[in-house]
Length: 228
Image (tube, rainbow, N blue to C red):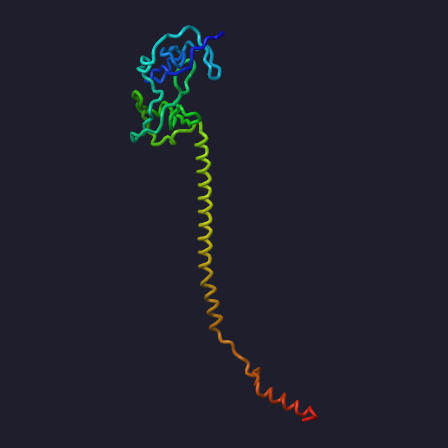
């Protein structure tokens, strides 16, 4: 039976060169002792399980908390404001050298939260519990893992951007239509003015006198009617 030494809790590292030296595991929730392991004691890693060789060194939590570490350090931007927390890291298994850090916007213990990539060369300075960079916002960092909330926000933002584009295109077409209408109106106005200002001559020969018509028709009826 393979013994269980507990869950990994604290990273043992050398911050000036960004190198992992080992880690500490907690045997149980009520045990104040911690098992400290060197990196070269790792025999195999399968998913979330680490198989080790040899025995661990025994220490306590108060001693381990005095070890320098950038894990859970606050990320400070160029203006001195906190923009995230160092939540995790990716390192080389054989050398322990850290390739890059993973930054969280909120508490790293919240499951499913987003992670942004922080390269080593982007770090300008570091102190116990603080990491400084030249970025202004966490969105300036490349996104590695997106949470459901962040995915929903991005999709909503894309929809709003499409609606804005559609609105801008519709406004542009309306302005073009109004400009074309302004160009046509003077032409129509000139045609109307020319039409109503022109004099249409009347043929005098085609004028009819209603009195003459009525008189001739009445005389003709008297001549044809024998009873009159």
